[in-house]
Every structure is written in C-alpha cells, then in structure tokens.
Length: 335
Image 1 (tube, rainbow, N blue to C red):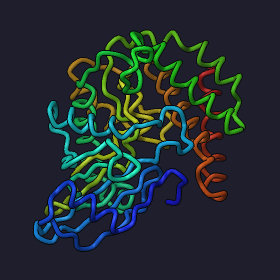
Image 2: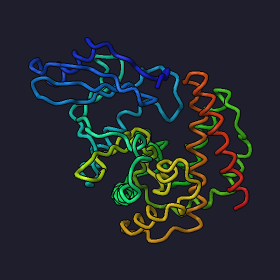
Image 3: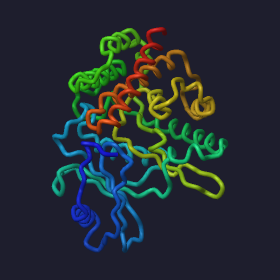
Image 4: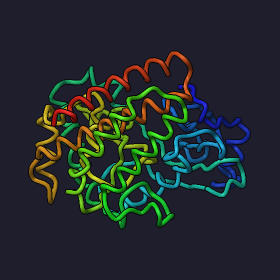
C-alpha cells in the first residue's frame, strides 16, 4: 500500500543497517519490500550465513505529517514486544535489534524474526469453520493474557506526566479530542458536534474502568499470522503493537473484529474470552456501550488518516469509515 508516511530505504542502506547491528560477517542475500502495511516500510531480508530471514521495520521520518497520536510510536511497539515476552505466552516475533538514535538513517527502526506463515485475512474465508473457530478461541485466550499486563496510568505510552492520566475517562476523552482536532485540521467532513455530544452523554460508562490494561487496538486479521501444522492452521504470531495504549480491554474487540457491530454476535470468541479472563466473567450493557464508543473512535481515526493515501483508496476508506461513525452515533444516541 502506498502511503506518504513510508520511509523507503535503498538496498545499500539496508545492508548498512544489517552490518551495524549484526556485524561484518552477516551477509545479505535477497531483500524484499513487504507492501501490505499502510504506515511503516517493512523489508524481508535473507541472511546467507545464518540461513534465515529477518524483518526490518522502518519508522516514519520525523517531520512527516501524521495524526497527533502517531508521533514517535515505534518505541511503543518495541516496549510491547518486551512486555509480552516477559509476562505472557502470546506468540510474537522476537526483537533482534532496535535503534532510535537516528544515527544511521533519519528514522527509528528495528529488526525482528520473520514469521513463516501468512496473515489470517488472506486465508480465513478458505478455512474450515471448525478451524477458524479454534483460532478465535486461541485468540481469546491471548487477549485475556494481554489484558493482564498492567500499566501505571491510562492513555497512550508517554513519558510526559501531563498525559499519564489517573482515570480512563479523562484519558479516552483526551484521545478522542486529539483525533477530532486532527480531522478538523485536515478538513475531514465528520459530524463533530454530534460526536462530542455523544462522548459527553456517555462518558459516565468510562468511569467503570479503574485498572489500566494493555490494549493493542490493532489486532485485526491482517496482523494475525497463521501457519499450517498437520491438518490445521494455528496462530504463529501477532504483530503491530505501535498503536497500543493503557485502557479498557473491551477496546481491543472492535479493532480486532472491525466489521462486527456487537461482539456478542461472536459467541464463541466472547465466551472463550470470559472463560479465560481471571477477573471479568460477564459482558454487561455498560460494556456494550463502551464497545460502541471504541468502535466510533477507530473509525474516526480511519476517516481522519485518509489524507495520506491516494485519491481512490482515501475515498473508499473515508466513505466507509464515516458511514460506520454515523451508525455508532445512532446506536449511542438511542442508548
């Protein structure tokens, strides 16, 4: 996917980064750009002597026009990989090296192990129903583990004490306010006043959340890799934690099931999650209201970010995203 945010490197630059991080004896074979992403540039690199392949993920050049919450997010992803490795059994790639100094290139970057399988979105429709249900059950268990990782504050990862919120209500309202300001700045046509009123009218439901849990907020099928083991597919690894924040675990569901207007429609997943969760054993009407708030948030983001895409894709994503925002508003105005 073409995007104005991608920092594309030459093969010589890539070889230099490999040498810096893995030594002179690490020889590079093939280099392939992985074009599926929409934000960073990503490369699959063959290492000859090691007889393996690794992945280089290259961050956005500082000064590139971004949404406010997207500024310098690569350190968040590396930190999440580290927390997940330390505290869970969730399968993820292994971080091999990272560099945020901008000494060798003009952006952050990191290397990680390559996954062998394919993203779930490419094959889910071809899979046997029972196999897909098993993957969803496993995913529910991984979410339950992820949400046991706890933070010291609410909101996006930051060292700025001003934005380390003590309540989820304050954090989420600030997060939403940032994206509304971005939308206005980029002249995205959205029902801003209706959104702001709905947030105010439903903000009391956010007060129920008192513990900051790690939320990936990007675990859709494109970021879940599966591989075939004997007769079935299994989850090989989960990717892309750069948009993570400390907040309400329920927020992960509308991001993971992007087309689902109510997580209760996927009984197998929700029941598995509640079974595996150590603390939460039922899904309440208040949860359903917050689900709609988080669904409205992710589609507002998707509408606001279209400025960096080509005309056709921007039009398609923008039109679809705005339609979902209106549906969420209608649901929340009735609740």
